[in-house]
Length: 142
Picture 1 (cartoon, rainbow, N blue to C red):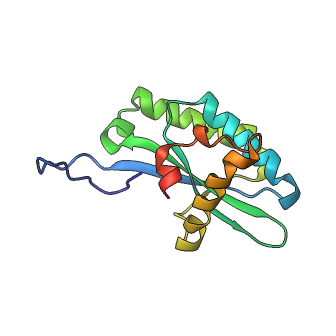
Picture 2 (picture 1 turned 90 degrees about the vertical axis):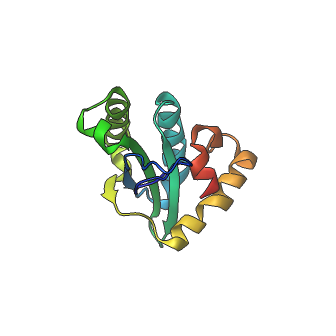
């Protein structure tokens, strides 16, 4: 997911996309429940580009950062169907996962981003914990 303008092979500059980051902070004991609910929510909103982009933890909580691509800035300003779907996902994220303390966040640090790849690779082994197919390809490459 890009935040800045994207150059196409022809040299044209596309409208920059708008990406927001939401961080969930479940208690460590509730991490599996949170990630399963997040995967389910992403599956229910399959048309929305969403990716797991950051993970970190401390003694009490796991911080899970999710990026949601609202689409090109001009389409967001016009409240396009894709932008409405993304807004719906974010609304459901705050409503359905409220017990995991969602907050808007900045982009994750390099360390938080680096923690994502091994997690998603191990998701296949964990199976029911997180269905990696629910995440966008951008999240897997992060």
